[in-house]
Image (cartoon, rainbow, N blue to C red; front, side, top):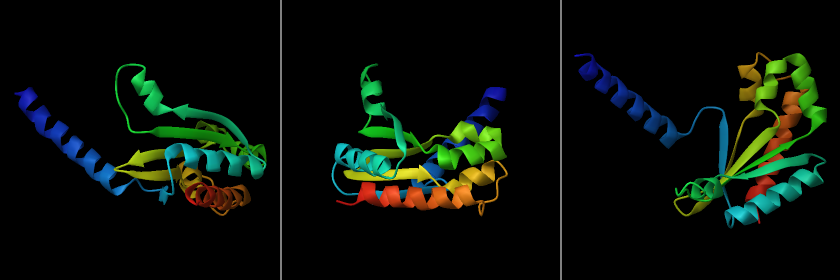
Length: 153
């Protein structure tokens, strides 16, 4: 009996997950990018370094999937940071370090390269930091500039 009750709940969660994935999650900024994933990552990492921030790592999720015999579309996560912006946020609430350094995802979706990131205001709200706090607004401006640079030829 419990198994029958469990099936509709699982189905409902699966449908909800599909709807959220199809429409995007709240607090995410996603845009189309010109060129390939590698070209977009190259533009992004150049823009990060030009802005005085540091690229910490580039995680190739498709290569990781391939290492276990699975296939993913090209998907790379660029992890980067600027202590001038992140440190004041961590001082405000140490738990914000769970979301820092910042990240941008570059991936192929049905033939289109995309670049996306979590809006700094959404991150701030998650940790009870005012979205108007100076480092949050500076981070928003920086993330917007980086996404534009990454997406444009």
